[in-house]
Image 1 (tube, one colour):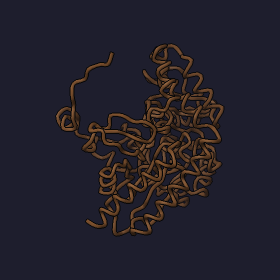
Image 2 (cartoon, rainbow, N blue to C red):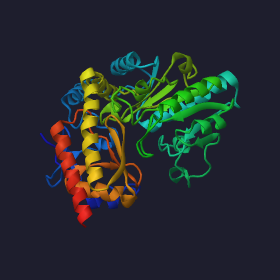
Image 3 (cartoon, one colour):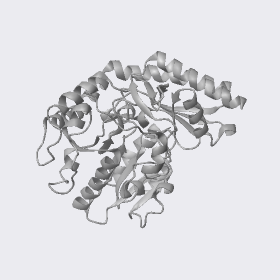
Image 4 (cartoon, rainbow, N blue to C red):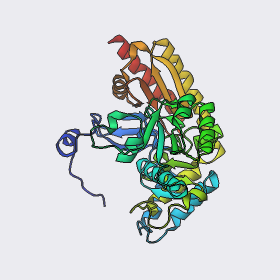
Length: 406
């Protein structure tokens, strides 16, 4: 028996929702693979991936199976008890990474909140309360809670909410001299994204990341890598730190970890983890069986040579076509990123027009993203079919042609 729903439309958003978002004029209602259909039945190709979340596209059979099986078994027991899906997923994450301990939560912001609290607690326990300073990068993004938005290096998101959390400073990304000048024995952590996602899809330099690791070691600070957007195969490695060969002390994951189901995780070493003793941190829903069952299915599919190698192959297919479009229409000055997190930097003539391109693409039946006003961002499914890549980029080119003729 199907449930009868009251009809809703886009105009209802403006009546019932807090106006902190400005969603598109159409409402997606169904997805399959890398295709989405809206209320009118119009089909779109999805290169946005729910902002790097739908890592296996829409309605992937392995995820649907995991969720429905778990939904018929056990939804929630709280952290007064543990549960089997959480333990299975934790073991798989530990086996696949540097980490020895896992903390589950529900989002990237929560994972980063836990990471920053852990970094301060480790320093507090080992060196005293003075060692509490956190260094992050200009234009970084780490979430929307008061702590994470303060660590993020974009004042437009943190201004206007009262006093900010103290002891946080920001240095230019990929500038090792600036980091050297900023770090001290009061620093408890350096927090970096392997690719600045919201900041413009800007990959970290190998030498910078290695230098940051060495500086942290010299100053008894922890290296925290925010892999919320880069993790779970997005870069072509399971986590981007593996691509660079630089191991953090703490790593955060979310977005693709659940393939569309809300889940976050903080991964760390036993040495760090022992400082979060019983009662020091918690979450009601974190590690719930539904999320962890889906997360286990996600890692089972992604952490295979076929899928990870496929990410590199698909990257090349995207990049060559995007560079060709960029050159032909004077659109892009650079196409950058790793794996299937790709940023196209708009040329001077197109500066500030990322949203215009996004809207034009949607009109042609393609969902893409922006990363600031000057970068068009692609974060499709890691298993997007070649035919969908080709058709999606053909639609993108049609959108560009219409804009150039306008």
